[in-house]
Amino acid sequence: MSRIITTGNKFQLFGMWSVDYSGSTNEWVSGVYQHKEDGGELHLFVESDKYLDMFDAGMTSIHGATDCGHCTLINCFCKSINHGKIGTLNDFHVNGVFLGDHLRSHDNNRFFKCSFTFENFSKWFKVDERNSIKHNESGMTLSIAMGNYIWMDVDVLDDVNIKIVESSIFRYGKRRASLDPQVRIEIESSNPKSYDFFSDIVCKIQGLFLIFVGVSMMPTDISLYDSDGEYEISPPRMMYAPDADIGRSVVFFTGKDDLRTAFVNFFEKSFAIDGIISKAREVFSGRTIYIENTFYRIIQSIEMLEREFYKGAYCNDDEFLTIKENMKDAISSIKNEKIKNKFLSQLEHGNEFSLRDKAAKLIEKVISNTSYGKIKDYKNYIRDAVEMRNELTHHSKPAQRSYTIDKYIDVASFFKKIMWAILLHELGFSWELIERRVLKNPLFTRI
Image 1: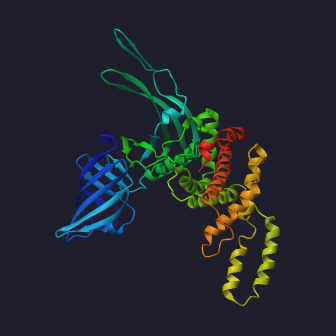
Image 2 (image 1 turned 180 degrees about the vertical axis):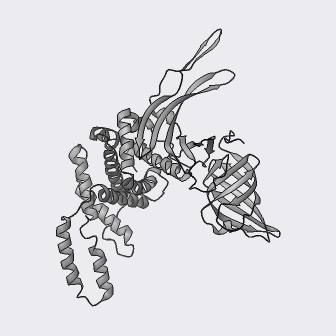
Image 3 (image 1 turned 90 degrees about the vertical axis):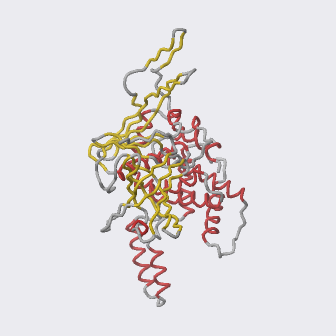
């Protein structure tokens, strides 16, 4: 059974399919899976007298016995049903393909290793140049150093090791040959783990490089390994910003030790960073056509950054507890239950900084460690951000100020720099590098 698809980003799988669910029946129906660069689709034909539990399963996995062997389609959902005289044609959206076997349960701990890469990943690193191809009149001499070159090796979590490994691919044609570097990320666990476990680690690393480069990227060439060998994961290609200048990004000017530190810090703080990354993906991907949406996501990230890392408060916990108890006693005399409950719910977060104070704290941290912002009246940015956020949140309230698109872009760009600078600082990057490559780099921070 072939575990690897060699036909590139487009292929088809014909066969019988069955959903991964806990029902009492196990219906198999015929269909074809089409894998394209912009997404994967499964088309199933179901006879009119049959009804499959997979239509009620929501997001699920679907197993296939196909012309290329066994496979499992990952994270599928039914998006349309077309009724005909003799049956229905059911279309499923598919978020990935596991080739070579059936993943009967995502809790099936069987894998020890996962490897993947990003588009143009080898160009981001100053790769080793031990390998070479030399041409002369008598022919061609190929020089390949033995083994792979480990660019980075770091332990994260309890039993997980991550490596950035450089190897080479020999490419040749009728008139030319080349030895191209290939850089991959390898994740290894000392204990067998599930597909979901490695999928989560890959997603986290994707988020880390989003912070490094400022571009939302899609992992490619994903493979999982168990005791029997290699299995390929083929996610449909997703759109990403192709015009980023990697050569000016932070990661291009980062040494091995700094990169290793960033990986360790990222996984130690992932409990706080994960939620922020979900907002930052939309900001860095550039997919939204509404500047208001981008601005709102940035402001949400600013609030989350301050709350998770600095926990700004107006007084200490003991003092606030006394204030809260006094306030509860005063509120208890209110007879209107709805008003009383509203005040009590607001009291629980009364000691947390407001958006105005959160933004001021982050900005002051940046400008106290860099020269950025000292010539700017950042208090005006804070005022505008608060009023813009309130205007977007309370649509029915008449706006006290009117903001142009240019103003939204200006304020959003300013706070994007602050957000990005704080994230990089928490990962361990120096303020000097952050100022040079982010704060004073309009290519990466202009919305």
